[in-house]
Length: 195
Image (cartoon, rainbow, N blue to C red; front, side):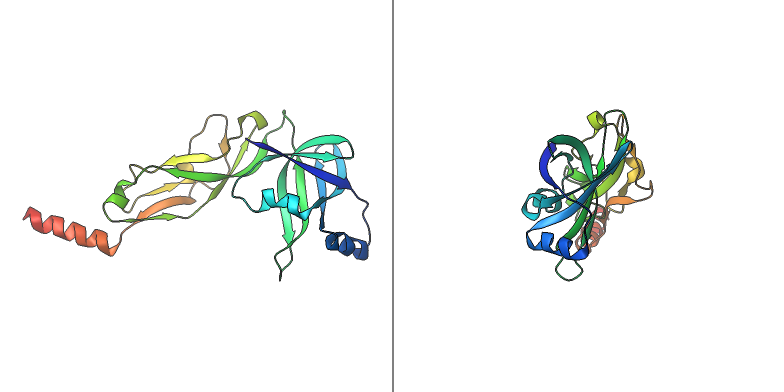
């Protein structure tokens, strides 16, 4: 999995007024936590967070805080209900020895048999939750839909990866090819031609 670097500025847990001033200065309050690590409070400039928030990709995030470096993943975010601007972000520290739980994007490849027959591809889930050691984390999960026919689905339980555990419920549908009017018409024409 790709790594990106964010520079964090140490901060103290302060009253609401100082936190609001921090946000007016374009800094977003953050916290880093994890096993065997005391909570580390810091802030990051909002423009730097765009590379995490405005992308479908997932990353290992190297945080540089007060001269120290910590590997982490983006764990949770709070957003303003009206403006949708980030209010607070949580990062979870990761190590080489403990599995990491993270959402990774789905990458669809191939030209579905069902779509060629006039069906419509529906993508229900854009990310799946996985668990793996840092060195085994994929940038994405590639699903080949070449053999996916009309009325057929691919679910999370169909995904098999070495050294990666899929945590998304097995019954979660990733994608499906649904029947359309065009497909019904093509099937009727084919049946009439066969008579």
